[in-house]
Image (cartoon, rainbow over all chains, first blue to last red):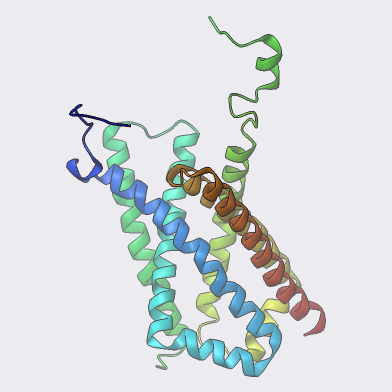
Length: 132
Length: 126
């Protein structure tokens, strides 16, 4: 089909990124990441079921710097998707549509995800007794 | 004035002919996942650096095993529903769209079954 010289509607990159649109696409991206992360959970559970040897290699891989990077990203994705998911459930129930409210809850979600992610990792390292 | 027939309105299935089942299941699993995931992450934090004995003792505990099975069921159901929407939004070639959705659903079922079996094996056989 020839479109000739008809005017086109503006493309996505024309628009200035806003808290609403950025958090919306981040919800999708973290959702996809978490779905892929279920493979990691499956692998960990199967390793535990397979025995001490398999579990030790799984723990070693997850404890390597690359494994920790993945786990850290997974933790942030989870807390972000969780907090923003609660925001979505509030919208579904009919609350929080004022522009100011949308912005405030959006930034609250970001702050909650960051604080919970770092908090969980600090507690995790504390549980390991500061070892490595 | 609505152009919908009385029968159509009563059935409430809309133009997609499937009603709100998908939407509703996505929300119900989301609500279930809030407490389940908070519990799961808190448990993982306390299990940081655990050896095999400690991990198996934790997974095999009856309460933990049941909650893990619920987490796997709700989580993978929620995941395949969400991925289906993403695929429907971005993949427009019909055969590729349908194939991707079917593969995602099969993969989610496989991950849930394999993970659930691992939990049950630990719970029943140690």
